[in-house]
Length: 207
Image (cartoon, rainbow, N blue to C red; front, side, top):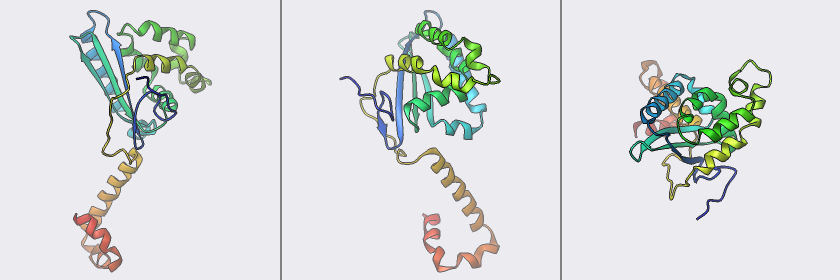
């Protein structure tokens, strides 16, 4: 069955606000361990970044799986924004060089390298001091998106138990809960918390 492309998810499926992407690459012979090291560096770079910036891209999660005896690589990620801006923002935030670190190891790199060259070379996609840096990246990703979709398989089914909530909503709820727990622990708040209007809030806190 041919997947229908949508503005929200591209070729993937969506549950609530979250969409899935699963793209398969063929690892160059003898490069399995290099791939494992490169994808670990990629995730380490994501961890070093400001979480607010990562959330802004729409990223929900990302993982790489080496399988088929070290011959295949799966890149699976889920995101909250629309397909086109997600890829653009992921490249801008994560950095082309960090994507290229692991993408150069599958055989699909020949096509990906052509994309880099068409965009003006690696320097044009990594030099953030260039006045046209962001515009150049956003205007050059059409070929990259096609390469990703050519290797993509749509999930047969997809479920996300928090699919109705965005990461900003989840983070806000966590922050509110932490702040409210601090209030509950403050003896000076006892009188205020006794007000009937706060009864539903206290019931939620006790649940």
